[in-house]
Structures are given as structure tokens and as C-alpha cells.
Image (cartoon, rainbow, N blue to C red; front, side, top):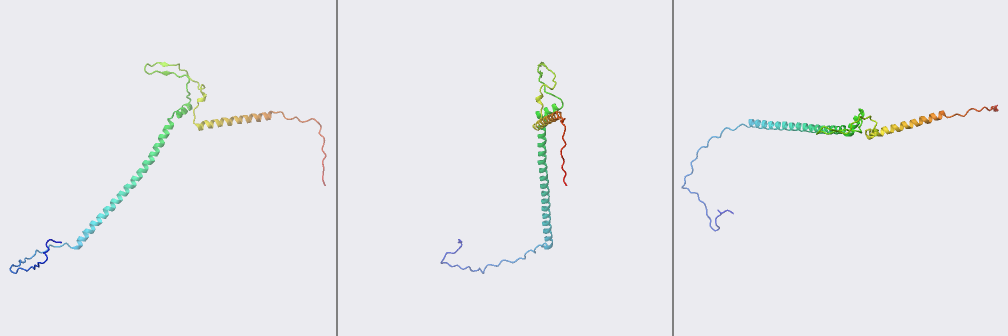
Length: 192
């Protein structure tokens, strides 16, 4: 409720004061010229159109950049796989077993009589002897597949050699001599 509410029981009526003079009327200023609606609408539509065109251009640019980023990420992934593959190949080629195979293929053989050079004073310990390559025949390096293939080839060659010897022995075995006994003619039968 409002605090201006009159107390109950008292009724007051407001009477206009007739003795006061009414305020003098004065003319209002003329309103300014209003902008026409058509140019305002054209400006509004142009601003809206430019805003939409700007948003479309921004969206297209961001989408193109996203496609480029995906392509570059894919390319980076592929290059990572290639790098890993090349590092694996490098480790395989530079492994001691691979180096031993290459050295053996080039005619290098392990020396069973090595000599050592002591670097601080330059002395040589041990007697260096040349190697013939026949000292350690069992140290022919190779991969498991190569060694298995070589063993299979050697076994096949051994079997072929044994078969050839058996065939030679069979041809060299004495054949029974023809008998010198006279042969008797066998009767023949004819049918009519």
C-alpha cells in the first residue's frame, strides 16, 4: 500500500483553485526533417548483406585452412612412418651381424691371432699373424634363413650324390650271363 493513502474516516476533495492563472501557452519548435524510409532500408540491407558476405568469406577461409591442416597432418604422419622405416633399416644395416656378413662377403675373415695397440704409449701387445680364412670355418655369418637354405641345399646335394653313386653301382653290377644251354622249340598252336 502506498503511504499517501488518506486515513479512513476523512474525506478530502480537491477543489481547483480558481484564483490561480493558467500557464501561458507557447508554441513548440517545429520537428526536424525525418529521414525517408527507403534510403534507410537500403543502408540497412546493404550493411546486412556486407555482414553476411563477410561471414561467408570468413567461413570459407577457415574451412580451406582446416582442409590444408588435415592434409599437412596426414603428410606429417606418412613422413613419420617413412622416417621410422628408414631408421629401422639403418639399424639393421649397421648391426654387427650385418657388418660381419658384408665383411665376410668381401673376403675378410676373423683373425684368431690378434694384436692390440696400446694407445697411451703406442706399444703392440701380441703377435700379429696373417689369417688364411680356414682357421674358423664355423664362423661363417648369415641370417637364419640363409643358413637354413644353405643347409637344405647341402643336404639335397648329399642326397643327389648318394643317388648318383647308387645308380652307378647298379649299372656296374654284373648282369646274369646268357645261358649256353640249347633251347628247345616250343610247340605252337593254331586255331581254325
